[in-house]
Amino acid sequence: MRLINWTRSARIIGAALTAAAALFVSGCLNKDKVDATSESADVVIGLTDAKGDFLHYAVKVSNLTLTKKDGSIVQTILEPVEIDFAQLTELTEFLTAATVPNGYYTKATMELDYSAANIEVEDANGAATKVTSIKDSDGAAITTLTVDMQLQGATGVLIAPGTPSHLTLDFNLNASNHVVYDNADTIPVSITVDPILSGELNAEAPKTHRLRGGLLAVDQTANTFKLGVRPFAHKIAKSGRTFGNVTVTSTSDTTYEINGETTKGAPGLAALAAQPDFTAVTAVGNLKFSPTRFEATEVYAGSSVPGGTLDVVAGVVTARTGTSVSVKGTTLVRNDGKMIFRDTANVTLANTTKVTRAGVKSDVVYTIADISVGQRVTIMGTLADPAATTLALTADRVRLDVSDLRGTVVTNTDGQPLVVDVQILNGRAPTAYNFAGTGPTGNDANASGYRIDIGSALRTDLTTADEVQVRGFVHAFGMAPPDFDAASLVNLGEARARLEIGFGVQGLANAVTFSTNSLEVTGFGDGLVHHVTKRRVVTDLSTLTDKTPTFAPAAGSDGKFKGVYAIKAGRSVVVYRTYSEFATDLQARITAGGKMKQLVAAGTFVNASSTLSGNEISVVMK
Image (cartoon, rainbow, N blue to C red; front, side):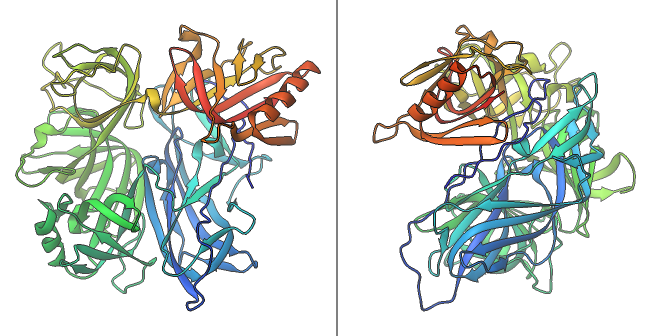
């Protein structure tokens, strides 16, 4: 079965409106029998989040249970966990490695505690605003909420011995929260929460995975090490109390940073083996299948991780003057495991501050000169006053983490930096940054003409207005141009896109025309939202050459246009599995006088033809 939730979408391009969000849940039913010789099986549960507009969304997960087909309930976490879901848009955090009774499971349930929530939204000027009013869909103040996810299939999903399973739960911030702004439409003042949880079992998702916990054992012969899971900011328990155990595979390319010292491959694993039991470790990597394993690309241990021996601030550099650095969007983890959220931290650097870079071994030397505006950083040091509104930290070490920018191409000239108009830099609008000092006089970085070194080869597939995602590191402070050194670049032309069109409060009677294999939008009415989003890069459909966007259902391998096509009218929701049934119903409603209020679709969008190809579309009728 498909479970469909209708809720309100987050703010897109300055407008908040009623939206239809389809929840697609998938599972894995490729096992045909249960091993009767064992009564339990292993399942690793991870948490992630689809992208939203929140700087922080920290709430407690007070309970997480799995329900079997026979109705029995299995609890999978041993204590409440505070989680900042806004930090999980690019990765999945391993939450628990549980041994559960084997059998078929039909539901996952997550209990959220909002009583001490810290939720911050970026306003129109790039500043963080804390949301103090949190309500449910009925307008009542929220203290706790329970979110259910029905697992696919008539019998649910099978968890069985000898077949390790990985269940990823996705708390969709964007679809679960409606942000209410003031009359000027600039300052967020409250949110309405109608939480949506989706998930997949054994899905080979593209997100990076992160595992945190205490070191239990190292096997240098097998190139593995075992961690007792202590997710997020949980203090490492020397008593051995964990959320389960996970074995991590190390390769010759795995980089290590242990107590500020960097190395790679087998020497790194040997250095890890020399650490005491229960040393705090964070492993970043990818979930692999056939066989199922977690393969680390980066490993951090001891004082190099939050929850180690130093106070740790993670955020993005938004300004720098001399040795004084402003870091915004900060999460502070104290050396006692306590987590503190502040929008800004002022960090003092010194010539003795040690600088490393994520994923680079020890033969490369970095200094504080490499810390520039726009760089994502993890800073380890000593906190002056944790109660202060603005945190002050003296840096002992700084790690340069991979930064992420999204935008559109301005120019692409052979032998010159790629110039991009930046929309999002490390999750924040360009207005949050002060680029003064990033280059010599007249050469400071400029978000609307951001210069990126992509190497010597010209990217012939990039032309003006193409959407791109670039990951890498900001160029050294005072040394621009270039402003950014790319480690990877993705042309988002083929990236999964979300098309969203609002036809105004009163709806529009003649908004679309039909054919046997497409639906063409012929007008936007007075609606404010008519945009397509690719990994947070937003394009206004009215600026494209072809201003009549088309939804074309994607054919499967059998040539049929199967998918999830939904129509909502009032409280009634009808879901079709084929485009033809959906189109026939929608056309009949329009012929009978119905008006469309909104259309939301997902798939691959081609700018030149304004065509979205996919098999997911939802329409809201007035």
